[in-house]
Length: 110
Image 1: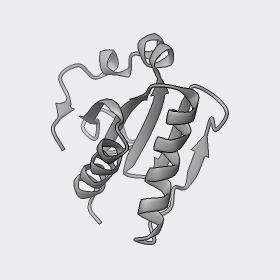
Image 2: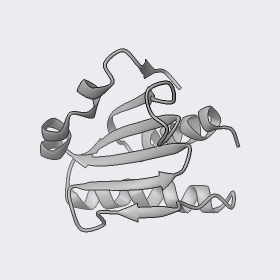
Image 3: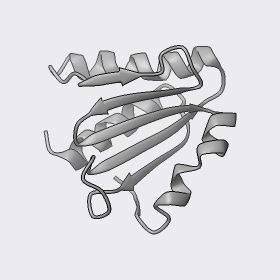
């Protein structure tokens, strides 16, 4: 699966699980760590875990697995799918880290 297709699939999964303020940022031209960031906000710690689990479970059905998962017990869970990094935030963490500020002109509607 190509990076943009993967990002689109992740957005669909997050939307199905009622993720808030889903944003895709094309970062491939600005960094070598990934082609896309997908950012989403969960409404509670339970919702954050549910969003993360849904992405992992749905993509696993297609034999797509994250290389690494970080922050399982925090307000920010990072799923590393190599080409696509998924950032699942709580409201407070999303505002504090404000990743959109780092890549303001690269927002993409994947």
